[in-house]
Length: 165
Image (cartoon, rainbow, N blue to C red; front, side, top):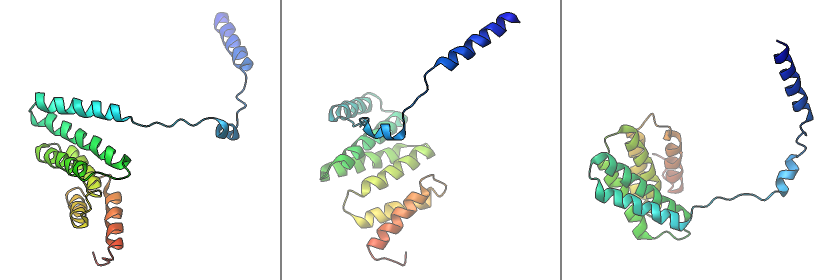
């Protein structure tokens, strides 16, 4: 019992001798901010790895997942680009379309449909985008993205001055 008391006393003394943290929120403004950015090289390496997976494995589970991830990488490139390339848009949509056809998992299909609707925004085809958003809302009414997709659809309809839908 006395040994435990001595250890507790030593730990208490040690805790009291630690210097308090005197930094303030104002000090954070002076510290350099860390910005993370995905490099083009790492995106390209990942893209090549998924393409290799597509070529080596032809079972639908791995193929659908590889296609979805290729779509995600392409979508990331679209979002980072100031002037998205039409070929990249079409390739991204093709990845998602094929992944949706092969996917048998409901959660994966929901994610693919959501990402595909995001990619549709770069296609400069508002009718297809509206259809994609409406289809998502009909097929996945309990999705975590339901509110966001509803908002995007309403915003799109508003900018098109279509107040009835």
